[in-house]
Length: 87
Image (cartoon, rainbow, N blue to C red; front, side, top):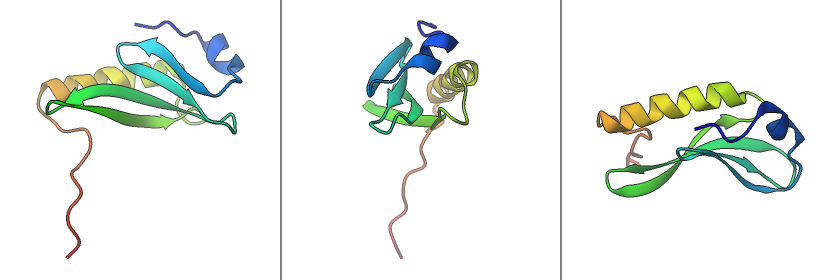
């Protein structure tokens, strides 16, 4: 894991998905704001799980969060709580 460097992340200007490895990617929007996403399979379905904005979560922390999230998924802990129906 770890294809992106801190300098690359800092210099990205073009909107798109930038892969770091092992399902972790950086999404850059048209407004040049970014956020970290982990793509993982949860209960047989592919999910994109947000890990935080680029302003708040740096590259090293996003990698740690991705590792923690994958570990939870392997243990059967759902990363996203199911929405409850309105009562």
